[in-house]
Structures are given as structure tokens and as C-alpha cells.
Length: 176
Image (cartoon, rainbow, N blue to C red; front, side, top):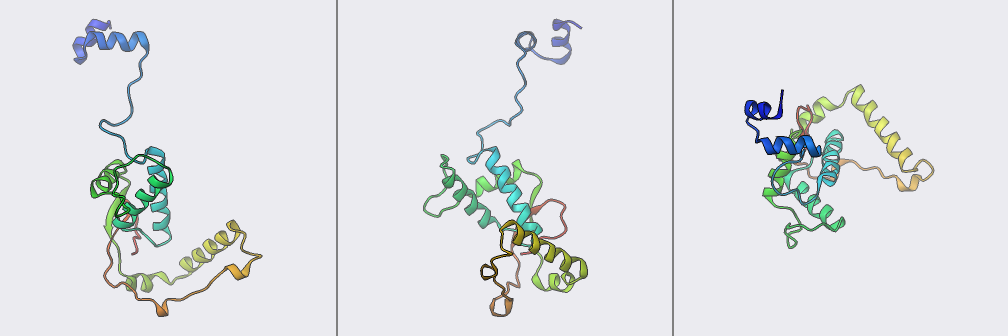
């Protein structure tokens, strides 16, 4: 098929099609509109961090993610329009962030009592100790027992009204 015929059939201007063939101009893969204040790489790090926290049972809420976005922009010395007085990104940024990363969604976190009732089983306990072993190994703490602390929740106020949290879409656990 010739260029003129292809242009007519697919509704593409002839000059555009000829330029693409002649110059080998690649089609842009990025979205229209202004780019994110953090940039693609930093946002992907933030997404991985959110998912990691969620797997450990600490899914972050909206406010935390907005604060982290501000802190990340400041640490990377990026130009941004986040609120410096409050030290966090805006609601619009968060909504755009969620649109750019459809694998993260806002979910209502489960209350702690249900998690306690179902969480104390052989598999969960084994996972906890495997995770503990990995943290101790990764941070070289086996030879430094004075740097390892133990605590229980007897003196802590537990939140019986869970907030909405950001979590990986389709995941089963989003504890708050």
C-alpha cells in the first residue's frame, strides 16, 4: 500500500506519514499534559514503598503519602508547587498520582480486632520470623543485640476506627 492510500484509509495527513517514514520519528509514549512534580522514577519508588509497607501490614493513608511526596521532592531538590508551609503535596497531586498508577487504590483499612483474630496462625508467625531474620541480616544486627528492641502494644492506644489507606489493587490485606 502506498503512502497516499494509507493516509486516506487511516485518516492520517500525508505529510505526517511521509515524515514518520522518512525521518523514522518514533511515536511519543508519554502522556499529554505536564509531567509529575516528582518525575517517573521517584513516583515508581514511592509506589514500591507503599506496596512494601502494605505487605508488612502498615498501609499508608492519604496524608502520609502527600507528606512523603513533599519530602521526596525536597530531598531530590526538585522544582515543585507543593505547600511548603504545611509540608505536603496537594489533593490534586494525589489524585493525579493515583490516576498515573492504577495499581494503587484507596481502600478502607480493616480494624485491628479482625486482624488479630485471623492473623495468629502458623503461616503468619512463620512469615513474621522470616521477615525478622531478613531485617536482622540485612542490617547486620545479629552481632549487635543492644540495637534490637522489643515492645508490645499494652501501652498503646489502638485505633478502632480505621482510616482509608492506599494499597495495591486486588490485594487482600490493607491494615490500618
